[in-house]
Length: 105
Image 1 (cartoon, helix red, strand yellow):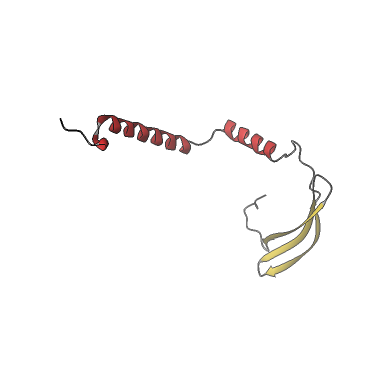
Image 2 (cartoon, rainbow, N blue to C red):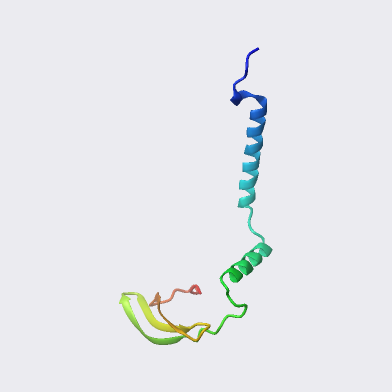
């Protein structure tokens, strides 16, 4: 009686095929687009994990002037408010001549 090598035994082959089927199914499942309900659930979980309040505070932006660091670019010195009343300084860069498209938020 001759023994079959482990790699060619029917049991190992069927286990390998089952593992391949599971991997294929899980990779296909990962490529399925998320539903709106999943996005809502994820956003809620992110807000809870980062302790973001349900109603966001007013940012109360203030502008302190502009300058042009390079041709075609305007930089605006601004500050905005936080939940605890602190002011955060920032510089907002924007094109000198906006295109017809709306700018991202």
